[in-house]
Image (cartoon, rainbow, N blue to C red; front, side):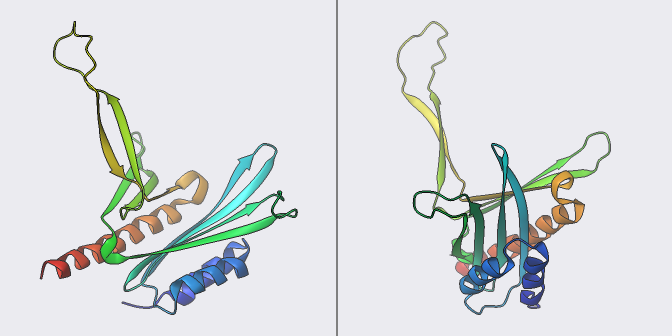
Length: 191
């Protein structure tokens, strides 16, 4: 598989969002490994009357899934001037438990409108509880709770309206590459 590291850093630079800071965090997190595939999203968010921007980069190396997220912040008690924070996390490809892809397609046109990639490796779980019930409609006893636990370590949503159709396709391409890498890891574990 080709190394896409140069392409990734060129896209980070083209984004114009603190390219040196994002690149430094990404370079440290990659630890010299090749980049098989990547996806990035530069997204503004509205906070009161101000716009805050952030960037998320996912990179797949031969052995790890690397996530780098950079936010900008207004000054606060800790740092009185506006600042950025960059967080990097690396997860072994073999640790990825699930890769979930949701596609939203317009019924009227059949056009892909957005996609959401959710990746779970067991660090964060979401619990959804509801009161347990029995089959007796007149029963008012407390039956406790029932629910589900869902892995939800990371989600990235990219839409045609906000990011462009090419960005949505890029996310889907990355999801396919990650799925293949985790399937290979699962196969290797069974040998």
